[in-house]
Length: 93
Image 1 (tube, rainbow, N blue to C red):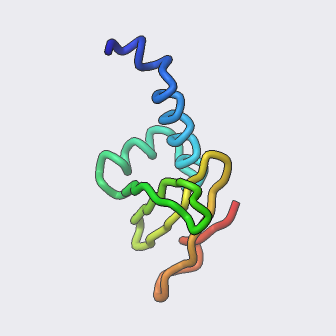
Image 2 (cartoon, rainbow, N blue to C red):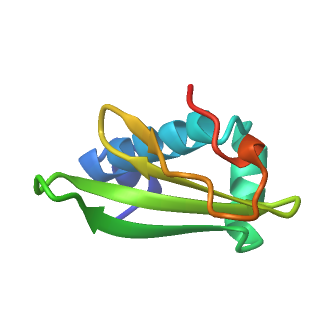
């Protein structure tokens, strides 16, 4: 598949939407999001909640804090701050 075909594909639209949600969830600019992904500071894992709704579980470890967000197509859910970590790591928007 060539680059122009990929850029207009449904998969590319889904990836762009996911990256937009991740940037919003962690208050990151596009370049900073790319950097934390490239450096392995953010991990992404598929998940499913008890209601069967699929999501991506994103974990960012930066500046000594661990922040976890479940990213759905239309919503962001911030997980509880683990014991011993600062409350700033769990900010609802």
